[in-house]
Length: 112
Image 1 (cartoon, rainbow, N blue to C red):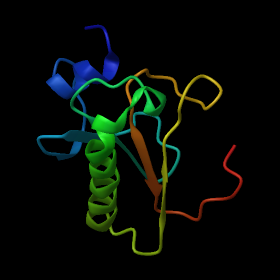
Image 2: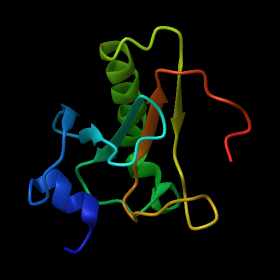
Image 3: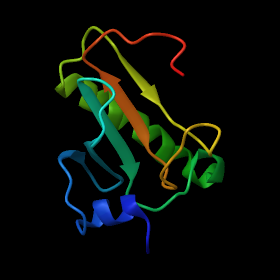
């Protein structure tokens, strides 16, 4: 498979692992937009949130749960942002669903 994130998850491409379990793999973004910028991706390839279906409900919830666990581990008690970019107009640049966890500084709104 030629998916960049699948290669990262399988270990073919090195990454800075932050969290991992049987359902997801989280790693530091190589172009961080905040002091803490972690990507949480499902181990199973899923192109985007738009490609999910009812069978993915538990996985989607698990990704958010994992992001909250990582935020706690990173000491983001003052707050953080969780974002999922979907599709070209949504800013998705890698066709593998992933949750952005951003924190460590005040985040402005609107984001883009």
